[in-house]
Amino acid sequence: GENVEQHPSTLSVQEGDSAVIKCTYSDSASNYFPWYKQELGKRPQLIIDIRSNVGEKKDQRIAVTLNKTAKHFSLHITETQPEDSAVYFCPDRGATNKLIFGTGTLLAVQP
Amino acid sequence: SQTIHQWPATLVQPVGSPLSLECTVEGTSNPNLYWYRQAAGRGLQLLFYSVGIGQISSEVPQNLSASRPQDRQFILSSKKLLLSDSGFYLCAWTDRNQPQHFGDGTRLSIL
Image (cartoon, rainbow over all chains, first blue to last red; front, side):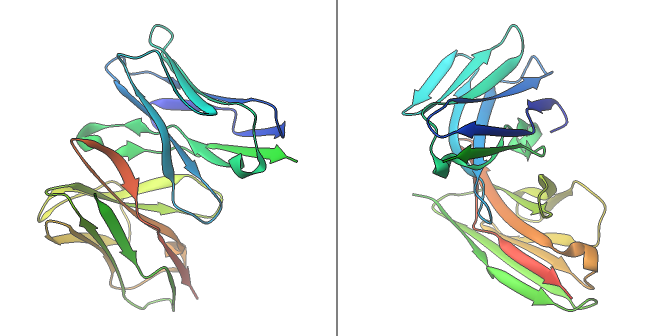
């Protein structure tokens, strides 16, 4: 997205390892931080999101952490499984709730 | 609960032919509606968004147009398709209380 940088662009991990994807934003007024997962040939699906009044949110093996001071938020996937292989996006939310997507992070979990 | 329908799922069209892709949302009123395009191996590009009936904003200049004839209906059109119009087209919706959700997409191939 225009105001969000995502790293890395590709990530390969062994099954069972953890994966971390980081996004850095520039607009201090940003208050909503979603993560989308897109499997090959399918639609992007929201997997977790966080608002600026919360520092961390967890849902089973996935978690999102927010550092407002440093202006970055990260997706953490623990105990990765082959079905976690996908492209992950942290879109920037602009006016009228439109989401601006970058090229995402291609995560490959090797069995 | 809200649902979004997008059709057709796949479409093969010759260069120069017209296009009409339709998207409808159920279970909400006055949603924001979006059309995205995704080229192979790339990120999602926002094409159009709409905040109400008859209100269309275009994000990028192109060979396509959008219309919103009814509150929960969003149509993507072209009078004459180009080879470069090939891609995966995704419709999405949101309202004040929901994050953005995507339809299943239309895979468009231009021959």
